[in-house]
Length: 350
Image (cartoon, rainbow, N blue to C red; front, side, top):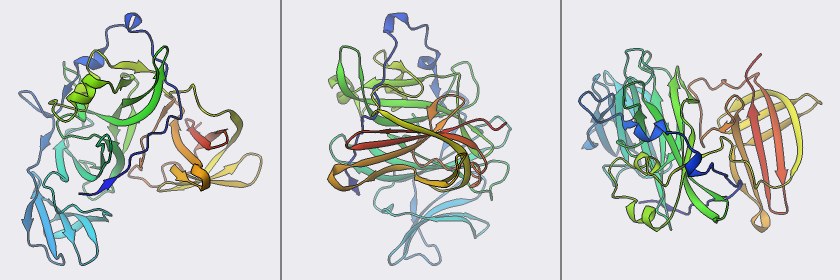
């Protein structure tokens, strides 16, 4: 198993509304999409060892539509394949081992967007941290109308097949609860570590923030720590707990001092690299994620949905790689002696 160190960066203090002032929270009554008499999502079986041409070792499982998903180990490489009619339909590299654990590659199928066609969700385990034992997964969601289309990809923490996609108890579309651990604080409680969940809807090769559900966080205390790994339906089960709180959309509060804002237009966005043509002239390049420099210096760049004020999860790449080309943006930069934070706010197109 790959172990990597998780770094929780408290780049914002999150201020919650007092529990007594909160209205009835509809999110607490959501239910997993894999449960009930008519589950919306079906979980595929665990991979089994199989013979796959060109692979030294492979593990595969079948999808309901006849395709199959495999991990293919070469002499020095590991790749994930989606095959249809004996041909490779999609393939991408994996920089970690998927061979040792039957739970490291999972798939779910079901209609996420209500168009009557089943999407395919492939979840790849990417590692588990020391300390808190945080699991990291990459999700690839393939559209039900065009299985050959590139997927939308996103990285989440603490994924499980039965606790990361939920829907309203009265029925409705499934939503991804994109979860991750963040540093923050509450008035009178000081700093702490929080599991934060953001509800997102699948739409035509993209994931959109769902304004019908708030951003929710739960502080890691002893009771929560003892329940991790043994609670059915987690991570969502932890966010419906009475200790969970509604957070502001952007988690503003304890960023370093604001040192400037610039406006511009995205010239190109490929993977985690963005080139922005500034209104004042010139071009700036930003790399999403966290980069480390000398003396423990950190540079953090994140995308923020201007319509909701909510940040996109790490590794978010829609099916269309040019989704941001031409989009108007504002880049707000915060800096102190150690940390530089770039918040790249994507505004609705005119």
